[in-house]
Image (cartoon, rainbow, N blue to C red; front, side):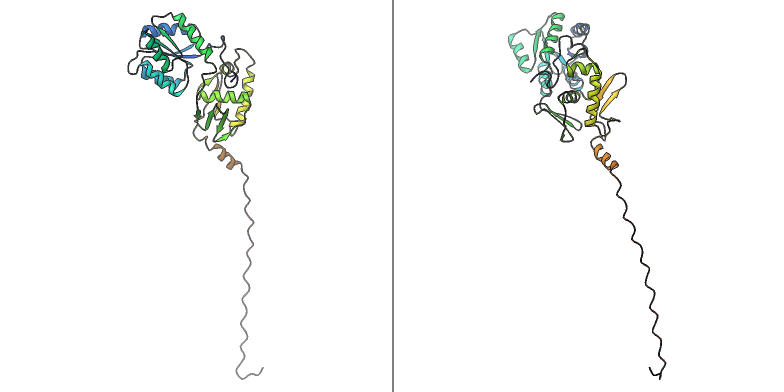
Length: 287
């Protein structure tokens, strides 16, 4: 699998803007970690416990999770297992437990890296960057991913819309696959160029052209899109769950079908005139 086959692997200068979720109940540690990550141009979210962290991870779909091992409600090992059951997001686990068995348990639960407290925030940022670069191709959804009327199967390199396989170019496939993986998220053209093309700089009209071509293949009316929408001044948003889109093609087909002309009326045949009665022959008359 080459980096560009599905999503481009992040380059060293293309990690800015990646979303990091920090799950830690120690407010001081969390604030320091977030401050260093923000200084490295990452977008950072925070969660104070395991349960809210798991829910936030599922809702926000971050690019990487920094997860404390000792958490209230649900410990970090269980949170790691639950997140990993849904998708292969990179996870760096933090812990005050430095024994080898503890590190092995965290790695077996699915963590990509393990850092023992106390640690250097600068070292953590370097590890985040390293894991993101290393996981650029591997951080892909597993199995068949569904979004509204779309289903994405990376292993088969296939995207279906309402059960019908779409005929897409390699780059159109990459773009639609990334949008399915980021439903209802506003993505700028710069975001798409970094994540799908792997370019930090380039002609942004390339993205515009591919969006237009994609609309021609998935929208009932490309001039009035309801799935791949433009957010003016920001970028694009993929809305696969718009109510009523599942049967929009059938409706459009019915509306566009020519009316069947009504058969001409059969002219009414006037009733035959009544037959006059035979004349009465008088009695005694001879014929």
